[in-house]
Length: 488
Image (cartoon, rainbow, N blue to C red; front, top):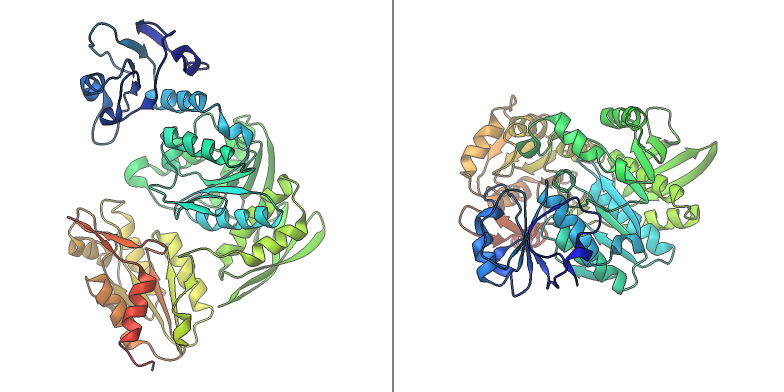
């Protein structure tokens, strides 16, 4: 491929060299560069790609794309741009022939609910007979084929390659979780969405965004790239988004969803049980009944966003009902160890934010006949300010809280636990640093009618410690512990 074809649509300046040269592939890791490749200098959190230009050239790179001035040997082409992340996204899009334009694209953003909503829409589309790709936190899917996900939204180069793989395997719809990081870091630059779903906005990722306004503005970028907007207006920032769409002159159609306000789609007659949730939806005066086999009022909101997206995409309502009734999501209000026929429930949930923890505990309380026992912690190297907030929520909404380690990463687990304890006002808690032992303690004290909620890790099958990552699938952990106990 010619370099000039990769630069189509990109604002750049040719510093030296020839844009008529043939190139190999695009890389942003100098160690992966080979003869004839383009090396794009990305400024990261811990290092700067401009420092590795010589390494890329010594490995064979013939073209350097940069923001800052670089000194290179004769025979190397230099392209200068204002933003190398945008350049990476645009050039990757050109390299793979703009694959996202060959599928229907549905993006989902928000603090909580992205994963569940993505699986809901995937189920609906498959019920309609379409082959579906999914990009998200748990895994990436091409039809029924599962690919490991390194992050919620891949870097733009890997994302465009994944889109291309989907197109080659005849995927018709791609559903993707669009994280605030990916929007801020331009990973989805150049992708046009047929529908964008906004779930909610609560405290998270302020270690990266610094302010809530920055966090919101990153999320808002998705609406600027979508033909249809489906927005939860029971959320404060959903209502702000509606105003900003008009104020900023964002084009496209907007559908509002709600339970407590008045919107285009309003859920009524909600019934929540441990087995799932039943509700009706009023749309233009027409009432339809829906069932989702995942409990929780927040899953009504998730379903509403998916119903709204389905309406915007003109999918048959009968298929929407069927798809929602069949959806399952790993690690999202997941009742585990059913084979043991326990007199109490054990629920695994990914809740790792204050809002997420509050949602799952209020949901579990609705079907708890005795005590609600919660096992939770907070991740290391992440937003410190949310720790005491989660400590207060976890103890206030539980009968017994067991505060433990999550993914401590480079931090001291007890230092994280002490941050959590700064928000605790009740004395209904136990501190057990080791997460296995904390789960074991919850099972030891559980009685008939109790509900145990193990929050924070959900679908994850590992735990990240200071010096290593260990296997830690909480479903397997629970089973191993139960095998050693007589059921009470």
